[in-house]
Length: 231
Image (cartoon, rainbow, N blue to C red; front, side, top):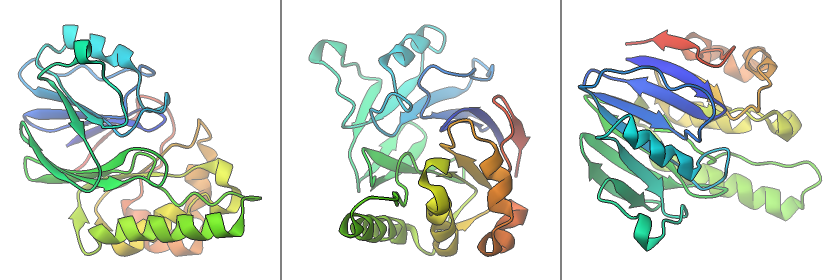
């Protein structure tokens, strides 16, 4: 399994017969892939740092590509195609070679738990523990409860690779979501995302006491286009 960090929250996962591209919105470079593989673009919600309609033009390069889009991404009737699949939260889907389970985001859209070729992947989208300094205490309390409720739906499961937000804008709460997730869900390989180009948070989180038991499976992201080959 080859994993490439494209940009922001966008990763490419290359399997033997299938390639999955999460939350690509036109920034960064998609790796060159074989013409024989099946290409899937999975976009968790409509925020412009997670989706732009320009990515539909990529079907000129990948004519068999399928698009799996959260239902909040609005597609006009004249734009609908058989290769565009709309999904909603807390559902399961069989699309091509993918088995997909969706969770409800704590912001907008969905997160994806995907199984393909015996590999299990989780991409959080904007499902995160959003604790904002200065926000109303009740709002932050509800956010914590909503986040834990969704993650707990995966409790006891194991994934080969997970992609989790590590957002420096949250100040001291930047890693709360990641740490809670990893305590509830087994992950062989952990990749941070949504850090707005501040790669230093990848180093900072490694110093956290609660992260020490997860360092063997944590992959520090250092630049766009970075690649890893994992089992």
